[in-house]
Length: 105
Image (cartoon, rainbow, N blue to C red; front, top):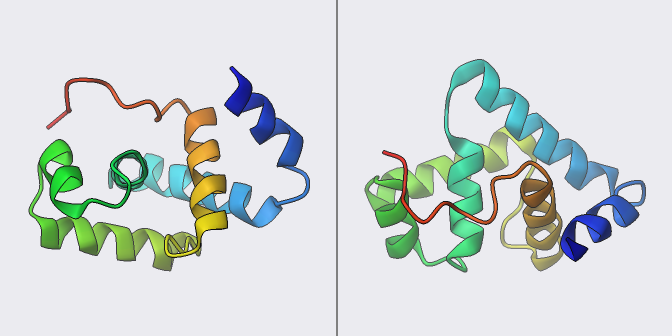
């Protein structure tokens, strides 16, 4: 897959984004927060809060809280297009994108 090759090629040049994704995945593994899947869905739905919330199965306020929490915990600024791209590539590498056609609730 070409996107994964790009991820590998830029990983050494953008360690902060790779570290942020790794921290997000590690936090989820320890605490079961579902933050990586929420961020992945947010990226796939191009920031559409209503569509993302429906997919994830939460209220839009809960979605916004989760996205803020991801930013606080891991330094992910989803308002920055470069960060969004790198986070998406990292989540693709982790197998969270593409999303399954059936949401997990």
